[in-house]
Length: 103
Image (cartoon, rainbow, N blue to C red; front, side, top):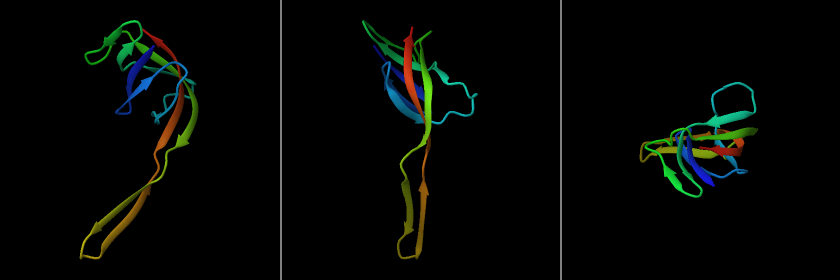
C-alpha cells in the first residue's frame, strides 16, 4: 500500500517504513509523531484518488532528525555592467519515518 501526500508545497509518494526529508514544519510541539491529513491518493487493493484530498485518510510519521539540505549557489550577473553577486542557501529539512496509512 502506498499514498501520495502533500506537505510544504511538494508531493511525496510514501509507503510504510520509508524515510523521507520534508521541509521543516513550523514548531508544532516537540512530540515525535506527525499526522499528514492532506492525502491526495491511496493505492492498495484499489486506488482512491481525492478531489483534491481523500476524505478520512491520514498518514502518520515519526520525527527522526532535523537536517540541512545540500548547498545551492545563487549567482546573479548583468553583462557589461560589472554587477556580480554570489549567495548561497541551505534548506532546513525534517527527516521523518512513515508509519501507518489509514483510510
